[in-house]
Length: 497
Image (cartoon, rainbow, N blue to C red; front, side):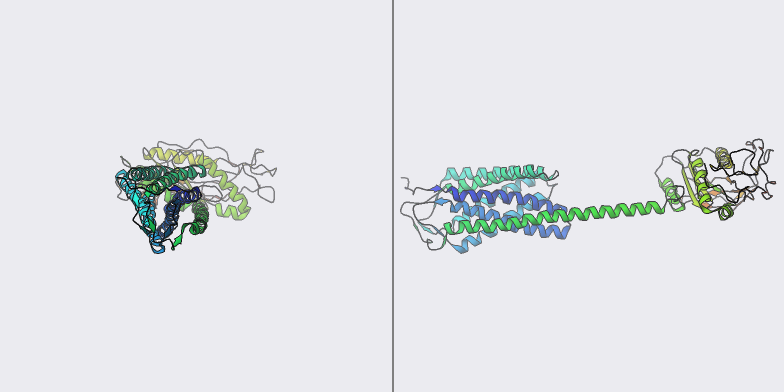
C-alpha cells in the first residue's frame, strides 16, 4: 500500500532567481576559461581557483534556491552547518568543469567521462542540500522523476561541454556566448528542479529543523549576495581582457619598432640598399640555405676611387646624390635574387649566386663598370668648360682603346667544396678627383665573404672581352695622370639625374 504524501509544489519566486544564478554561473564559467587560456601559468592558476570559487558559489546558490522553492503545508527549516558544507562539493564540481574546458585538445573519451562526473556531482549537490532538512520520518524520492532529472543533467553537461568548446574555439561573440549560457544553464536548472520535484513528505512528517535557517529569509539575501560576487568577477574578467589586449598591443608595437630599428641598422640611408651588416646577413642566408646541388657564388666589389676628395670639394649633399644615382643604375642591372649593397662610403658589393663561370662574371663586371662610367647630368644651368655639350656632364675616367691583356692575378683560394671562389671587379667612377682604376678579388666562403690577398693589373678583363673604342672625354691625362677639368662656376651643380 502506497504511503500518502503531503501536497507540494515549486514556488516560481524562488525558481526564477535560481535560473538566473545558474545561467549567470555558466556564462561566467566561459569567461573564466578564456582568462585561463589567455594568461601565463601563474595568472591562469589564479583565475582557475578564483573562478572555481565564484562559479561554484553560483551553482551552489542556484541548487539551494531550487530546494527552497519546494513548498509543503508544514514549515521547513535548514541546518546551517549542512547548508554551508554543501558549498564545498559545488566548488569541486566547478573546478572540474573549468579544468575540462581549459584543455582544448582533450580527447573525446575524457570529455565524456568528465561530463558524467560533473552531472553526478550536481546530483550529489542537491542530495546534500536536501539532507539539511531534518524531518521525521525521512524524505521520500520518486524514482521515475529522479531518473528523468539525472538524464536531464547528463544531457545538460554533455551538450554544455560541446557547445562551450565550440564557442571557446572562436572569437568572443556576445550573442553566441549568451545563447550558450542560456541553453546550458536552463537545462541544468531544469534537471535540478525535477530532482527537487521528486522529493515527497509523508502526511505525518514533522520537521525537526523548523527553528533553523528559513528559506524565505535566505532567498533574497542569498540571491543578492551571490549576484554581487558574480558581477564583480565578471567585471574582473573584462578588465583583465582589456589589460591583456593593451599589453599585447604594446608588445606588438615594441616588436615592430625593434624590427624597424634592426631593418634600419642594416640599410644605407642614402641609397636604401643593405649596408655591410645587411649584406653579410643576406649572404649568410644564401650560403646556409638548404640546396640539392653545389652553391656557385660570386661576390663583386666596386670601389669608387676619389669619392672622398670629391665630396670634400663639392659638398656631401652632391656626393650623396651621385651615390644615389649610381645605386639606381646598378639596381637596374642586377638580377632578382642577387644582393646589392653599399658597404662603405665609396664601395658597393654585389653577391651573385648561380654564376655559370668566371667569364660570365667578368662580363658582368665589365657591364657594371660601363654603367658607372656613364656621365651624370646636372639639371642646373651651370656649365662646364670641359663639357662640350649642354648636358653638363661629370667627366668620366679615360679608358684605353686597345684590347687588354690577361691580368696577372694571385689569389689564395680557400678550400670550400660547396662554394666557388670568384674573381673580380674593376672599381671605377668618374669624377674630377679620379686618379686610378683598381681591381680586387673576393673569395666567398661559407663563413661570409673575405678578401683574399690579390694583386692584378689595372683591369680584370680576359682576352675574350675587349674595351670598346675610346670615346672622347673632356679633359684629362692618361689613366695614371691627373684631371685638369674644372667647373666654370664657383660651385658644383646641385642636382643630379
